[in-house]
Image (cartoon, rainbow, N blue to C red; front, side, top):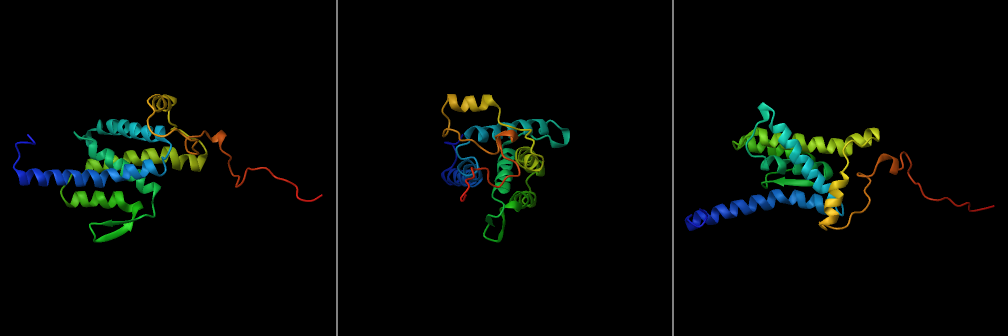
Amino acid sequence: FYNSLPPISKAYGTACLLTTTAFQARYGVQLEKGPFERRTADFLWMMIFGALSLLVLSAIPIFRTPFLGVSLVFMLLYVWSREFPNAQINIYGLVTLKAFYLPWAMLALDVIFGSALIPDLLGIIAGHLYYFLTVLHPLATGKVFLKTPMWVHKLVARYRIGAPSRPSSRSAAPADRPTGVAFSGRSYRLSG
């Protein structure tokens, strides 16, 4: 099919696809190179959790959608916006806003341009669910409900995917983390 397209339509379609892919994929790259650096298993678990959440949500009749690729991108966008809330984003060279508001601005733009609301909204819901269970709830209560399962760590180690893991305060159990302590090092008496 692709080879049968006329040259201008083929070039235009390819440029649109590559531009869209590069623009949308950058959030995942920034997450993996930023907050998830050396935490490949945690990043993989976020993607698996997001995909499973989207499948469950799309089974609800009002959220039914045939294609969840856009929703997964919006989930990444939402998590990215929470990890980099103060980054300045320029939308089409017209509006500059903080990254925290980007998922909602993109949702509004998609609706204005005639895209369906549900796929974007599903991604935001799945992203918020992940962020709430891994960051917000543990910070508020000290209880971690959603940790990366050991089988994901073993899978990443077995196939040597990404860099070796380093201990993470997010994936560590609350008992492994000091709570309410600004400094937990040794003390030495200076005099006497």
